[in-house]
Image (cartoon, rainbow, N blue to C red; front, side):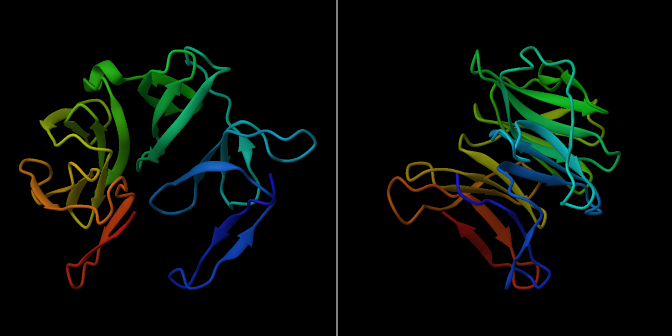
Length: 219
């Protein structure tokens, strides 16, 4: 496996410092205050701190396993993405490895509830939290939004890979055929704003500089 550690930067990404023991986390989610963290590991190495499952930490060094109840297949699942709202409630896209289905779950103190039908999503691709609002992007071409996790509104969206929310702009990433889509009004109207430079390469992440308005993307 080699060594895999969390890295932390305090100077805007110029330098990074390793934190804690080796970890094989596939994602790291934090609350807005940056005081609580969730991470998910898909690897397990006997005799080490590397273990399978969901973990919680307040310092990025000590991690506590989070047992989850309410899952249809508790021994064979994957967590793709997770966000934490201001009420310390986690929302995640969870995949059942046996069926291949992806669902949206709401997690409160280790109790997971499938809220996909409440939302209306059938094919959730990504989830994000921005300006006190939860966004679920459905790969069939829809965005679902909620400010409390209970009441959801929907709007049509371009089909693509993921929804990225940055500086009050919504982006739907695409491929060399669909390009990149932008909404300036919270998903009510969309504009195609560019193609990827190389065939077969997709947009991975996007950020908008709040000072000059330029958008920067990784492929």
